[in-house]
Image 1 (cartoon, rainbow, N blue to C red):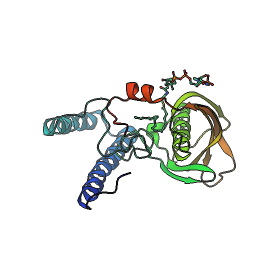
Image 2: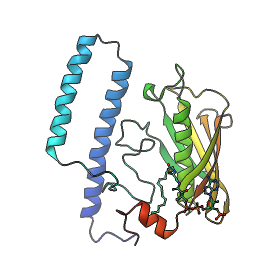
Image 3: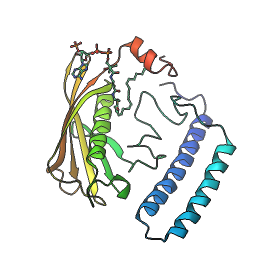
Length: 221
Ligand SMILES: CCCCC/C=C\C/C=C\C/C=C\C/C=C\CCCC(=O)SCCNC(=O)CCNC(=O)[C@H](O)C(C)(C)COP(=O)(O)OP(=O)(O)OC[C@H]1O[C@@H](n2cnc3c(N)ncnc32)[C@H](O)[C@@H]1OP(=O)(O)O
């Protein structure tokens, strides 16, 4: 990575990320409140009208980013994805998971809410798979082998509780040419040795021509 020529671009990136994070935090709070409220229908209609006005304000303030453009607050390929539905501080869908390197791979910490519910009080199984997929992708990045998921199997041993701090662990177990084998678990943070969900995946690194074809907006320098 090139060193910044002055501190100004760094400050501006930090302040743009802080703004994205602030908006994401409020969107998540609104989502949780809206999904859990017991307010009567007229209050929900009022809120819907207010939100429609806010959406119009935002879309009139600036053009939208075209689909596929990498946000200027992101690192791609890299570990900062501000609008990821799993780790994105700016996403109303994301818990968001905080990822660090450790335990021979990567470790993610998060708490799921009502937006991630499957069976009452427990996580949707698809969301647990998404947590594993994301953390496994980060394990590949941390191992210097970023790639795309070509297969993911999950085993659901116990339901994953909402409102409980969770720990997701993923590590690369083997590499074979362009294939990267990864395993991972989702556990309660207070009992990391008991896997609630476990998974195995194969990621495949991209050859340069395929990477250019799939991500034409990304300069590969
Ligand atoms: C400008 C540079 C950018 C580079 C960035 C690269 C990756 C970065 C991507 C994301 C990183 C960002 C964040 C990471 C965090 C989270 C991760 C989320 C991950 C996802 O959410 S990602 C979305 C879901 N994912 C897909 O959307 C993939 C659809 N897929 C394809 O687009 C193709 O599949 C592709 C391009 C991957 C490979 O295509 P290809 O043509 O280049 O490769 P090919 O088919 O030749 O296979 C090569 C070798 O992999 C073996 N192989 C293939 N498939 C297999 C399978 N299923 N099981 C076991 N082995 C398999 C073959 O058997 C052969 O092995 P062998 O060489 O030994 O014969």
